[in-house]
Length: 200
Image 1: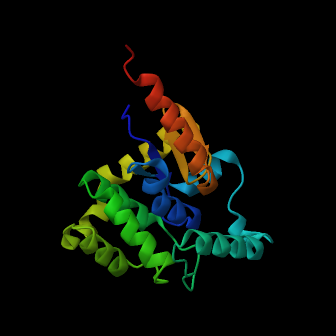
Image 2: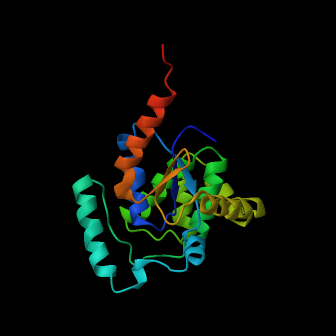
């Protein structure tokens, strides 16, 4: 297992948008972003998002306040949550190409800072260009069976590791669920580094 912290995300999650923006500063290093299908995790755990409940208005207000406190832009797209399957396949492809973090940041910014629709392939293509990828390869990547399988397997592996929502940060075998758990994850990361330091 990589010694870098893993940050599990789905591009539809505004909390994951905040977490990815804050993670390098809070954790002291760039985490390894891992795309997963939040819808599949919802199905496994037996309940879904607050976005479709009466809690939506209050949670949106809380998110806006949190984003303002962090200094992270947050603008809601006209339709949210959108159908994010293509976006998550694009994120998986970007990870395979070594540009996973750059693509995730571009896609989060497009959706939650510019209010774009990440279900739109043209929006995803522009995010790919911003991330240094060949946007012309995107349509084929979205149809690629290997990309689809990798995303399914990553989601299954995340569930097996204890991920029950996003964002989640994994430090060793410990899972920290929620943007507000980044500081605890940072403490665990520091403890882990200290325990592995050579002694005299």
